Length: 282
Ligand code: PAF
Image (tube, rainbow, N blue to C red; front, side, top):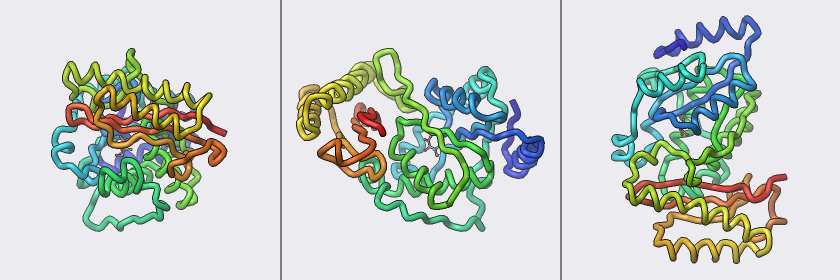
């Protein structure tokens, strides 16, 4: 695996590959890689010739500076994992490479996609995500980009950004990878206490139950039942909502949207755990 820390060196390497007619698949990450990230890379390997993974813990997407400080950074373990699955390139830039002082600011009209759910709880988070993904795409210039369904809102926002840029980059959504008890894989899971981890394994059961309920009940009842179960389980709920997969606005009837997704964020041990299930997709 090639390791690049400088934009110019990465770009020189990738230009040569593109001149040979090889396609570039890109997987942006913040490291602390788990099976979920590795499945993004597997997906990329199926569709592209050269796979680039970046690890950059982006400070501009953290509204909570202690969360940024606590974010795990096991870089040498990450490198071993990437080597083992045959990733071709790791891009490991410094903050100076990503954010040089003369970098022009980017602004996109996100049509309120950044204001609901996570956006309502993490001020400026998606502005930071858009800023870094835009910058990384500008450096890597990939043919395809792989992002996880677990961060459904992030995926939807990047989809809109690419549309507004009129970008030819193919955006691929990769399904959620789950632990044995169904907990959605996340770099944050390692910070859970033993009891917190057990409790976290129950979140997905409530989502899957909501999926079952949705086959026979209206969405208001589905939502109310799930909230009752979350209350009974003494979960600290940031939000539990059923949204349209494009507008991310809450819906009350399936007929209102082509894609409907149940999304939640639960706090355990002060850690925000995201999960979602796509109920219906056209
Ligand atoms: O999902 C993540 O890990 C990050 O938000 C991303 C897309 C790598 C941008 O920093």
